[in-house]
Image 1 (cartoon, rainbow, N blue to C red):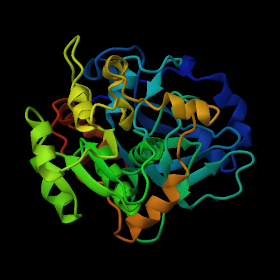
Image 2: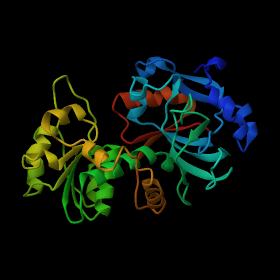
Image 3: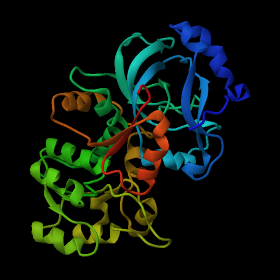
Image 4: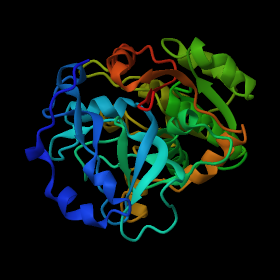
Length: 351
């Protein structure tokens, strides 16, 4: 893998303006390897590994030496134009590492502390898939939680926590989680169990046994799912959370019509995490009503502390399938795009 020369003209002015605010000022003088893109397109075509400056944290941000970076389907969506932010843009939204610099106003962590959280990709031309990354949300790494396991948590925990809350699930209710073998679905299953719910999940062979070991009733997805789920329970679930990825042909609505059937014909019992086009056609909820009720879109980074501690205590987990050196990122990309991840894929920049 060749590393291209860094183009200084592409560095945002704020990096230079904020460099003097950095607690550990030498960090602004170093370089970092980083994976990013300068135009939108297919990830394999537009992404490159290159050399750039280490970000100097703006007020309220920190910079970490990245020990592990989790990859997500959202990374590939960014490459394809999900975000309209100014390019270049980095990938890698899940980070665990050690603080090397803190911005103005940061008082809860110091240089040398181990933390994990989401990489801030909007204010900097790089993200977590780098030797150094900036964060604007973080939690201290609990004792007993390794960096690799911590880097599997942020995006998955935030998304699952938000949708389980939006679903309205209550203690003692029955919930069906479609896509229990996805990482968000796997997290949502564990969260629902902690809420005292009775959980059914659809999943493939990879995680079916692990879900059953948690006390979950499992049905395979695909054609005939409605009949298989009904064979497990004799009434409609109170809540259905659709965590399955969207791989739809034009004009199709995926599993949502079947989920509405399982909900007794009531689409308001169903909330989907990703299939917004299908939701518009079936009346399934997308969370818009929750955003309105909450007075705006609010991410659930507050869930990281509790679930990080639970992970350290062995009471919560997100499966890590494989780890890769930063320079082997294309191997991880190929596995992810082919749908063969079977768990989280994690880059290890320090290795």
